[in-house]
Image 1 (cartoon, rainbow, N blue to C red):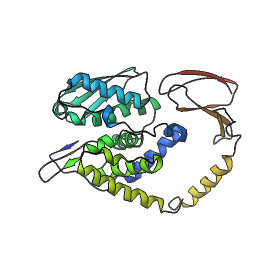
Image 2: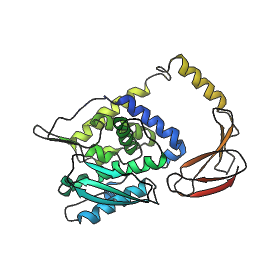
Image 3: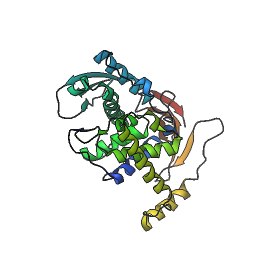
Image 4: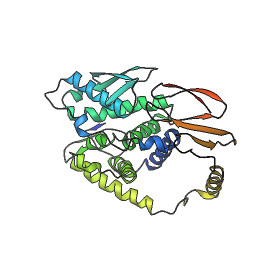
Length: 295
């Protein structure tokens, strides 16, 4: 969080951001990401000065848990003096302790943005999805928060004028706008109508221009010879039995040629992939639902 200091601009983390979006699709699958087509609504995370501080923070945290489909997770929110904006203790659960900077006692409009980032840490922790190094892992968290429908809060917390500035998260404002634009182009959603910060709107417009530049690039331009060969191989091996009519199962071969079946969790809709080996017992990493099926 930057406060009364310079805010970095531009796209210094763009490659890591793109890698984070790719990692989300690989870990969650296209079908699971489609369940996040609707962003967190402003009314659900609104926080006014007349609200009780602790009860209001718990309410917003519960709404974000619901949005991320973490039913077996309880957030306990507290406040203390600290250098960073917020911190979460990642444990086995189901209770997770989130600490917010004391400044949020008086800057309550940004509590939703801070909690969106910290609850996403819990989501990625349960997915066992991370990047090496604190910097890249925080960029992954910001990108996932934004792409899965809660990151517009982080961009809206960006405010800058001639004498002061504030920004939450590790991405630059333009990078937040870029990820929001990527999401908007996929789901046909316009988050700019929710912005209360004019600087956030400007950053989103710049991010949209950069995202549209990506669409004009020929596919596999930067992949190189090895990348194009790997893409052709994956396309050849992608032809499997496919989903059966009326059955939410998808059969695909893995790298070793073994057949795997994927199906959605009935509770949180995340796709679960297991080898085809008769009767299997699997546990959803997000909601902890135990599933048994014949494959």
